[in-house]
Image 1: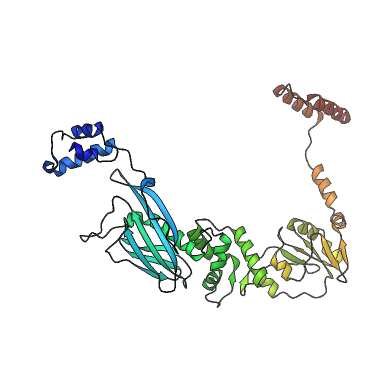
Image 2: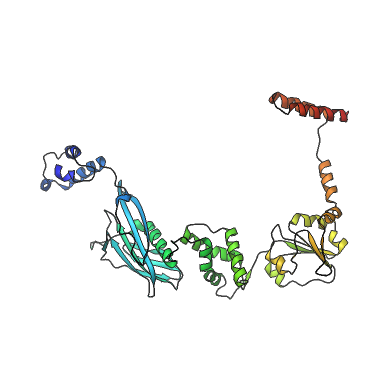
Length: 415
């Protein structure tokens, strides 16, 4: 028994004899050991040996004409660590997608197949019946999978391997290999922009029921988020998505059927009506009767409310447009492409800068002065008491003399 144990990793030399003695098999020979005694010997050997790290497992590595990906790790079952190495290869295929599975470099005898459900690549066999990768539905791949590990559970008496315990890492390795195969030479480093543009038409078809309905830009975002998450394991943000859509439309024109949410408003003077600025409203917008001959565009909505309160639009026969701090598409589509605090009068060549004048007529400075005057100020005695208390807490402050001088000056003025 000692010679057998000495062949185990980490159990050579004198340690082999100690393990055999601890297991109560000091004078035993291999053929006389029972199942119970061998289990005890294995437990003692494990306790004395170092855990095998997955980095020690040697895989096949890259293969010509295939994109390669691998995952390493350790699974724990019954307090026992099982190191593993998952290798996956993929290349585009002109025929239907197919999958070859190997365990320790040997093809499995169990039947394994793949099927497509739109963009999902699904694996069936060896204990797995689930999506293992995603790609456009008209793209097919030849996929190979190899699992290097000292132990694989079986699914039946036929000794078919049960790969369910490795599912997450199998999915990760195959997904990466397929993603690389879709973009050879890119090392699989796709950006969110790449994924969005690859699947944009598919997402539009989904949210519009193949062009039968209008759809919101946000609906496309929600349709693409799980795709980006699956391919890049990253969250598609609203900001990133909006930038990609802007790029797409600048290159190919506006997306037919898509509308944007209202962001901002336009105020019609003399009518007291405010209309929100959104794609659907702008498409049906008709200028009212001649109640204004100018239009002021303000990026910040707060200023527009101030002008409405002062009836500035009525005084100057001027409509007021705002966009909540964003230069929105709806404002542009309204044929009023006007820069911040500028407005158009008469001929197209007549552009007047009016920010100071507008603020004066809106009594902006008076409103600020009134707000400052409304602030409650302490009397001289309260100010003096507050400063003394402050100096008691911070007697060595460098600005003490300056504060004292200002306080005395204010006190004299109050008296």
